[in-house]
Amino acid sequence: MKHFSVYATLMFVMIVWGLNVVAVKYLVDVMHPVQMQGVRIGAAGIAALAILYVLKELKKPNRKEILLIGAAALFGQVLHHSLLAWGLLNTTAGNASLILGLIPVTTAVFAAVLLRERLNLLRIVGILIGFSGVMLIIIPSNEALSAAAGGDLLIFLSMISQAFSFILIRQASISLPAGAMTAYMLLAGSIVLIGLSFVTGGGETVFQPHTAAVWTVFFSSALLATGAGHILFNRAIQKIGPSQTAVFNNFVPFFALGGSWLFLGETITVYQGASFLLIVIGVLLGTGYAEYQYKKYKYAN
Image (cartoon, rainbow, N blue to C red):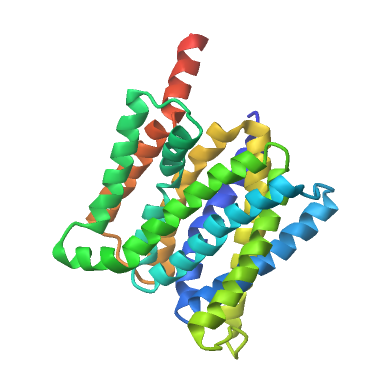
């Protein structure tokens, strides 16, 4: 099968990313949330730089690219990771993974508004279906409304921040390789997050005695999921294109839900199952992937 190795690599990345939501949920309960995120993505940034140096894919950014890297790091690293960490203190890894699954659709909305990309009726319907899937888990009852004001709402804002950063990344990666852009963002965001953690954490540090299991999860998350995972994902975009690559993101909530049940003992609810189906349908329609595949099939026959 053509591109089989790329598809296999992407599926591996989706498994790692799904389990990474579970890992971060585990880590925020034993470490200062914001500082943990800062040190974690800092380690990922250093690993990414080392990998890119070996692959000879590093490039020095110019002044315009530096500004875009700073803005993308603010939304994609500082806001996204801090909101994600605080949100996971008050919600489940399962809910978080489903809300984050809306990133492709939200990115499409930002692209339409800011980059004037065309949205037809089918894509608009998909966007509405996707958002309805998230609303299904955020506000199914009065009890969930309270959670939405806390954990789920913070995860939702984290998702929006990440989606907006992708627009900035798209603009910067016109001239700067996506891998280098990612590494620089990780390092810039790490510095700000670590500084912010000392303001919000009263001098608390993650470098305290922890079990071997905690450090294994920490470095696996940093180096495998955040560092290598993003580089492999970006390389897949170069080989098979963004539309085919993006559809694999639908597997992240699936593996995260399974991981949260297996490792954290979370219960998978009917609301979560229905939400997963709506978000998958919404992403397939809202990103234009389903329409693209239909036209491709139609013209081939």
